[in-house]
Amino acid sequence: MFGVYGVVAIRLASQSAPINETAMTNKKSSTPRRPRPADNAFKGETIRGGVNEPTYGGALSFMRRHYAKSAAGADLAIWGVPFDAATSNRPGTRFGPRAIRAASAILEGDPQYPWGFDPFAKLSAVDVGDCSLDYGNHDEVPREIEKQAKEILATGATLLTLGGDHFVTYPLLKAHAAKHGPLALVQFDAHQDTWHPEAGRIDHGSFVARAAIEGLIDVKHSIQIGIRTHAPATHDIEIVHGNAVETLGVAAVAKKILKRVGKKKAYLSFDIDALDPAFAPGTGTPVAGGLTSREALMMLRLLAPINFVGFDVMEVSPPYDQSEITAIAAAHVAMHFVSLVAMRRGTK
Ligand code: MN
Ligand code: MN
Image (tube, rainbow, N blue to C red; front, side, top):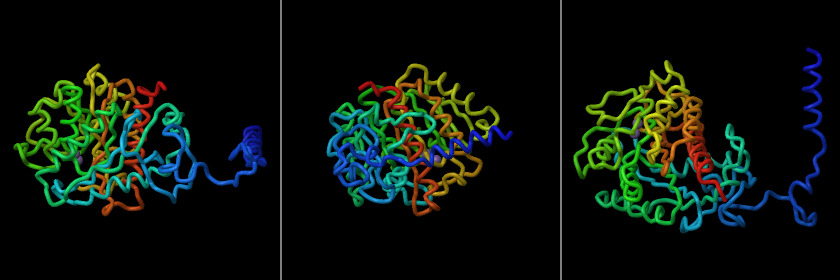
């Protein structure tokens, strides 16, 4: 017992030993000591590698990535779609991309838990800003999102989108399916999103039905996790209800997802209301009895064998958030997406 405390004491002593700050910050000792590089979103010298900046200042791109006009030359593009006019209850997700970017500043520059590596050491990634939309012309919104998503995908980069309400996933699926064919949908959500799929409606509760009817997704390889509401149709998509995550456990649920998707190309859509309102209060249609953020993040990591070609995290509504709880959870979900891409594409 005494020996154990002794080891702890030695470790603490070594951690508080004097640090050679000059060696850690700059090779040229004449350069003033400051975090390097200042404001990486604009001034960083490369689109690879972690940086260490204060979390509270500078341009808050997603995880301090470069802001770029184009995703050309990058493995991964992070993009916001600040649209919330399709929500059935509480609005506010138009502020989601900005909040997730700000929350993500606490994550940059270090090996990410539990992956154990800095994904940007394996992967080049840029933040391409937000989708440009006319708030006064809703009829154009689906086409605009699809068109701008296609422009990003044409560069060869994998697209990670920050929402926005869940309607946004419909034009995103159109853009991805145009490139890859029908995709296996892996959807974390409290809702099936299969209501009122009539063509032309702009509704955050209908994108799955629309995608199934139009053949954008391959329903036989699609699966929804965390569902805890009833909807009129499943479209033959496999469902893992919220309660089943508790009774089966995360490893068994992850196994179900891997089995369902198989070798199909897949799209991963994470509605933040998959999490319990305790872990994601800032969302449009919260439902009690949901996943913990630990359960969700553990499952995401176990999905590394899947060939995901696109990702989104949706329904973060900052006006209903408290202490950035929801935005921080969403930033961690998105960081796990980045790490999944790094595992697969990180070859350079
Ligand atoms: Mn939902
Ligand atoms: Mn949804």
